Image (cartoon, rainbow, N blue to C red; front, side, top):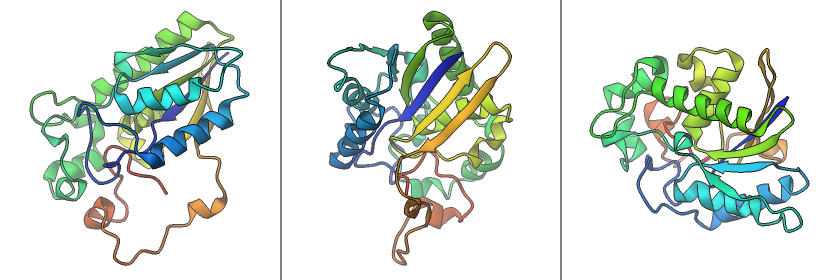
Length: 236
């Protein structure tokens, strides 16, 4: 039974404000580095057979922080293109508040399987799920049935993998939340996957209570309280 630990990258300066997408050179900010170091400390005692990451900088930095404490048992960080961020096309770099007013936003909320993001490099979400799940399955086969390994990727990519593990239609993956530097554990068996843990940030239950910021401006507030933030948002 192969155990896959899915970790979303830590915060960047634009997380939850703009749709960073595949914009090059986006690094973790101070908060993101703290998050990466925290999740690294939490996972330091977990024996990992591999650390596989999206090639984008924010994921590579997160993965390197997780690899760093393993002095006695170093694990090389390996890049996997199929775990890269969604190709958001012309939505890349746009403020989420502006995108929430686009007609496509509501399609993303309710009929994700039909979405192809507009413009050059725009990707269909069904293709994103296919490439990400295929990557996980290929690494499972490569590492073997007794492997435990970590994958560092992006919010919407991880949500699509979780939906697949639960047998959920892609349209339902907006009911899933994946916060920065959260840990999701999926155990793969020959018959079916088992979702062991999801969106675990290792904090207190206080983080589950929404903060009261009357003046706070977010894409969710602009679009509707029930909307999922494209890209995954900034977490609690």
